[in-house]
Image 1 (cartoon, rainbow over the protein chains, first blue to last red):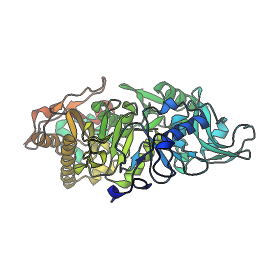
Image 2 (image 1 turned 180 degrees about the horizontal axis):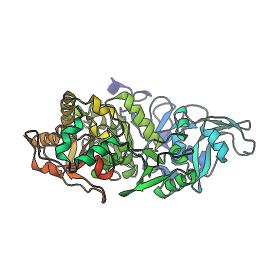
Image 3 (image 1 turned 120 degrees about the horizontal axis):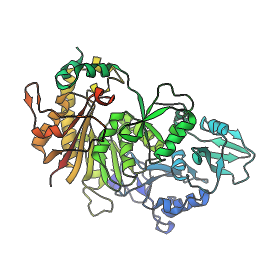
Image 4 (image 1 turned 180 degrees about the vertical axis):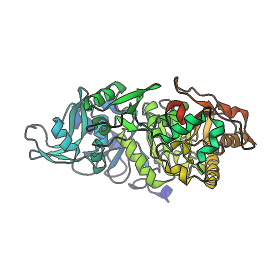
Length: 178
Length: 313
């Protein structure tokens, strides 16, 4: 039974709240709230205040969810807020949905795409984009819509190439009007 | 037989009612204010050459013209969600507030759930429940695309919904709760009101199905009232005209649970008819007239039923 699960196990069937800081860590390898918020600030310049009022949770190894409310810890449900980050690997990977939701005002590692590049990116194509002179790794790919820059999703930039990580289910949505 | 014939005695203009039910429905989208503003979404549609017209009663609910060309960037960004016009009514009757605890009993695929999240400013605890695991994945997909972050997805039978996962038995724990501020019961139903979108519902209609689904509706609505705090709100809605699934359900629950039907603010410019108190020899509690019926010819929409209940202190 889940109720008997030792507190130091990372149990895949429930959501466990992240410890506030690394010093509070009980479960090995579990990131802390502080590290998660710092990561968004360091990588994309997202203001930590954006996450005030959010609670952070892990379900399964390394999958981090952000929830804009309070519930009991642990909690056994099918979903809790939004999957925002994959941790417990060398390079933490943000999700498409999280970048769309939280990187609207990102100030770092945002690559602006032309209309043609944006379309190709959303269709899942990798593109040679040698103009980028910033960091390698996960970038926010953005384009201009209705007069402002808007995040499209997550690109992985390596060796002059921007690889699209837009999930298949999202790729089809560009032509769908229902 | 065409089940719509049953309802001829209820409508003010039979001919207009049947004519409207024959016409296809316009495509309608709701602007998702979690990710953008109504002004920006409309500007993006204008830039893409997608033609639309705002509804008379809600600036963020847009009717699309049939032959819209081009790609749809605002849809990709989760700025828009396809949602039938009438299906925006239950959340308006529910009137959820930021920071509240709200339960959507039959949430998938999530049009109303995500509308509720937006009305809560995406803040608080919104439990989106569905008993069908396959449909839950559609709910999750829609919620994530629309940027919803205050949703708890749950997979229970709403009729005996357990509050145990939310800490009912551990009130001393932070974040635990045992009752909701508001609950939406958008019940499974015989769906005749969707005939303009899906005419097959009329061919598949049987009285047996009405009777069996009515049992489920009663069970869900009773449970909804039981887990709502005193003074809280429960909204009951269906997309059927059948009194057996509408007023009769309210009447059944009014007799057994401590609650009452109250008026709700129908948007200006949206025409509705009152709930009925007599049907095929049955009589219902007089307060069910406070529920609102929507007929397709009134606003050129699908058919709908929405009632607001207040749980007594």
